[in-house]
Picture (tube, one colour):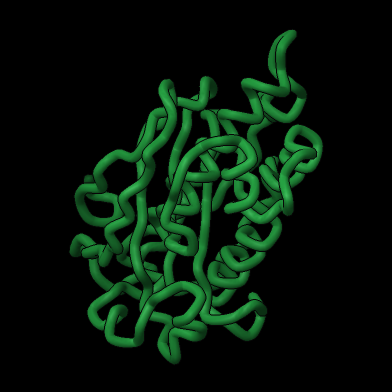
Length: 227
C-alpha cells in the first residue's frame, strides 16, 4: 500500500442514495502519516445544496463548481492503493461509492480505518465521539468544522494523535499496510467529455492553532489532477 487517503465529504442530506456530495476533500499521507498532497473542491450537485445551516454552503457558492464526474478521475488516483481513513469512514465511503456508481464506476472494497472507532478506544474521556468532541479531547485545537478540508485535516491530526497514544510498543494492527486490490481507472475525457483541466472551487479553511509538533495546514494549489 502507498499510505493513507483521509477523506471527508459534505452532502446535500444524510442519504447517500437520495442526496449528493457538495464538497469533497482528500489528504494523502505516507506510511509515517506525513502529508503528501491535499485536494479539495466544492461540487455542483445539480440541485439544492441542502442544509446550509450545517455545512454553510449556499446555492450561489456552487455556481461554476465542477460536477462529480469531472473530478472522478482525480479522486480515483488519489484513493488508489491507499488505506481509506475518515471519521465515521463508512459514511464517507458510501457517499463516494454512490457518486461513482452514478457514472458507472464500481469502487472496490479497500482497507479502511475509522478515527471514530479509534477514539472510542483511545479517548474514553471524550464527551462524545463526533469529530469536534474527539479533537477537543485530544487537545488538538480549533478547526473549521463542516468544511471538507477542515474536517479532513482535523481527522489527520486525530489519526496522528491516536497512533502516538495508542502504540507505545510499535504500530497497531490498524496502521499496518494491507494487500493491494485491483483499482479502476477513468480517463478525464471519458468522465468529463473534455481533456481540458478541471478548475476547482475551494473554500478557504484555515486550521489551528495546532499544538507544538502538529503539522498544521498547508496551502491548496492547482486544478483537479493538474497540480
